Amino acid sequence: MGILLKLSITYYAIVAVMCFLTFQVLSGVAVFLLPKRLPDTFAASPIKLKPFARVFFSLGLVLISAIFFILAAMDKLSTAPVFLGAFLLSAIYYWLRSKWLNNRALNADEMLKR
Image (cartoon, rainbow, N blue to C red; front, side, top):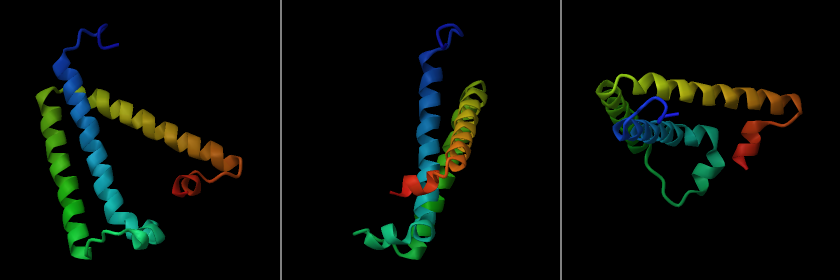
């Protein structure tokens, strides 16, 4: 598709960076929510951050990644809508798949926790 649109390697590099930054944002949120969502996993972890450090590093990771995401989007204005569109389609697919599994008495969240 990129060849048909005559896109450059810079475009692909920015989209790749946006993927990594999105992953970092999700990782920061996951570390922040881990004790509440999966307390057994958090308790079994050999490395535990104190609550202040966990909040500090999680928020720092989210904020720094968000800033760089905005800077990457500003570099090539056409990349942000394409990336966000693909991300939105992926989120919709995940939501539809969860609903489909729930209709068959399978809980996607429980399956992911195992």
